[in-house]
Image 1 (spheres, one colour):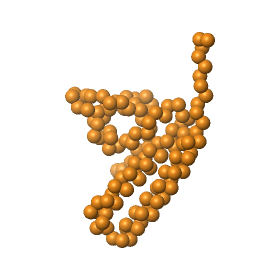
Image 2 (tube, helix red, strand yellow):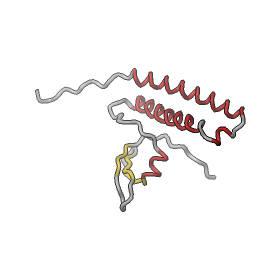
Image 3 (spheres, rainbow, N blue to C red):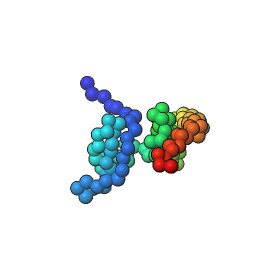
Image 4 (cartoon, rainbow, N blue to C red):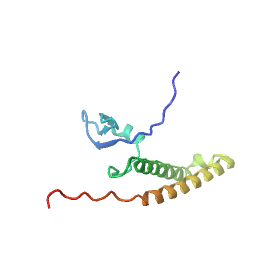
Length: 127
């Protein structure tokens, strides 16, 4: 039986062309590097900045914030569409509640990220 899967993996990626097509080289958690077309990659991934200096659990918080922020932006934009205006009042109210909850989550995650302590500076071996 088949089913759908939502991706939760944090990857490292950089722009790279292949056969004249814009895309990204993508390195997964196991270190495997593949190539993905730009449109497909950007549909599946939300940028979260450089987080290599953070602990793994902190990186997951930054990833959660990036995904949630992206959803807030998309839902906010959706509220301006004719399709949204055609929804029932009940569904519009539910979406407003959802947006409020997501906005609250965004604030909590921002506070958590702000509280991460910077990694200790590495002293130079040559003094």
